[in-house]
Image (cartoon, rainbow over all chains, first blue to last red; front, side, top):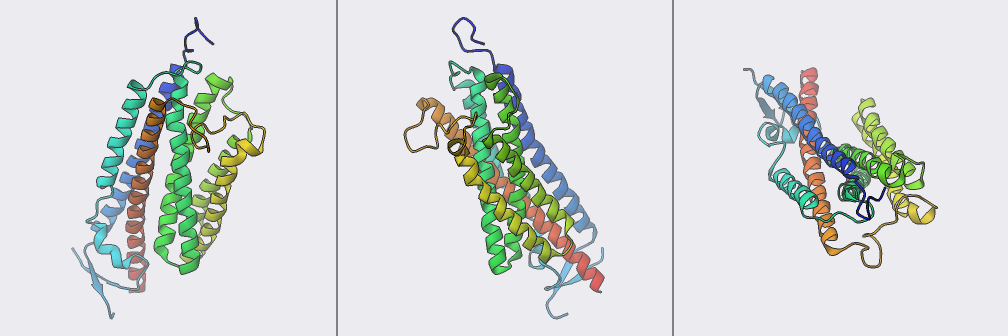
Length: 55
Length: 247
């Protein structure tokens, strides 16, 4: 794997790992945001909540 | 638009319903985490030297190990909050444990996928049934099982109790995973930073590693916070459903 005494060319694996990690974290954040937005829309669609303490 | 009355004891989340529509899911902490992560990427890609023997693949270390430590952090929170729940029966602890469990699975997925991307060029194989790798895969399945169990049990009290036990058991694996490279004859490298003597790395690589570690830990906490807020909104909706059923 060594090429002329220099470091081996393993850059493709490193690039895939960095891109994949970024996609994974960003993907989860987007999914979480989408789930939350859907939930908030359902709550908003049901109208304002009036809190009562004694029935 | 109609207004509905919601009794204070209608459900777990009733005291926080007012916050659901106003609190942002992602706040300043998430912004700081994203900036830190971008800075860590830039430093690792452009300002950190390529290792002489492994080449650029060595840089996978900077995303792989901080992801593992963040997963341990999240699972530590799962265990701690599970203990708190079993002790105090506080549903906020259960919700925080659930949120941490989901985020832990994301980081464990990062660990189990970036590891083989380093293993292929360095070991010559994507995967080996080495103690460290096998235990980490087992931890991934335990964490996934924890979340599946939570989705499968309808009764909130039973769900919280059962999942608390699994959450504690999952976290008990972490010390074994860390020590597995000492306890067993494994192919996985021994720690080069988290060890009693000085790091086996030049300072500029150590700085890059700690930059990534801080960024990953911040992202982990920010995602747990966001997931917790999602849990609050979901529980508020459940409380509304319960209140409507009771009317």
